[in-house]
Length: 500
Image 1 (cartoon, one colour):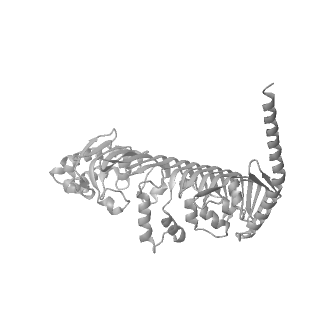
Image 2 (cartoon, helix red, strand yellow):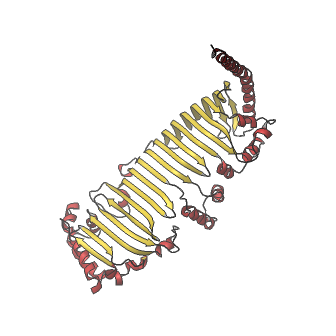
Image 3 (cartoon, rainbow, N blue to C red):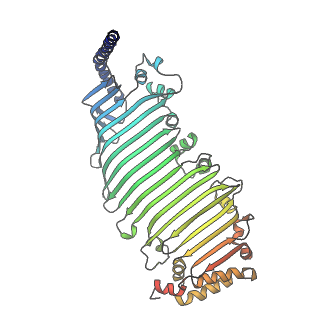
């Protein structure tokens, strides 16, 4: 019995609160809806690009603090005739941000500094757009979450002033953006083009950077060409600083500002924080109007882990190119329809040097493995061609397993009967002297019966890059060993081109 009274009081209080919320909703929600209608009409009327904006009704929920517009229609002046419709548009507005829109409440709600979340989320369902005779498309859903703006920029926007767009973007924050099931068709001068996109996702837009971006299942086609991409991924993107970005957006890269832009871009690429942490392409394909114009890619990936110390990894898997792409430059590859290659590289700082390891393999040509360390002037890599030419090589080792490369090279120069004698004479001429005797001998073994060849630098002392190719020191600087293959160069050439 003694618990009944407190329970009864609690029930009465809760009931009163519920009635208060319901009553407030009945009073407040219609007021907010009418106010929102007037504000939206006034706001869109001030946008020059919009000719008309209409919607069937507006709903406001006090409990969820969300504003919902139904059957939205927007007609643009520029480009003329562009129409956009949205079946349902829901906007979640924090109470403090809503108060900032009321001039009388703005001094109390808008902070003097810092940022303010102006929108918890925006969800648009059933989006369609069209430009008569040129463009038509639809989007099943688009959603934005967590929009925050710098207080000073928000005040400027509310007062009708336009802040610097780069400055606005630098201080703004967007938690996420998602879109799915995009379909679009466009009329072109030569016919039509279509595009579909399964999903687009972006996370963490702040400080001129994007933490994560994903684009999935992209398909594009014209009357003659088709392309597809299963995945494009990007993590940890960081744009150039505000000054560089303003210059690029205002005038781009041209001859007049090249000397100013290049140092800025170089500084961006070599900063302690890399411009992007990871990039990936998966299952990309392009089909042209002719079979020889087609290409595909299974995987391409970049992991740019750090610049100080430098740690970078790259990978390419099953990159397929039409052989005509190479043959158009004068190289003849009989019997081949495509070029397929894969490779990996690992670059990292090691005791003040840069260590590079990896492999590159071309199907039906061969496989190259390498391991080398080098140092650049100044100690910091800055992507300068002169810096590359002046680098010092320390230890280096290369191993190549031939799978037809030498035979294809020889076929572009000689008949099978002449290739062997030519290579022997060329080696005697280009590598003269007793110091190069072992080098000539190993290369002749490889040229006679291409198998595998190993090249190792004999000293770990720093050697300028250009001196590594000095004929006078090649025999002392490099140790070469060759393992003969099962088939002679003559037999390989005859097999690849029986009529020669």
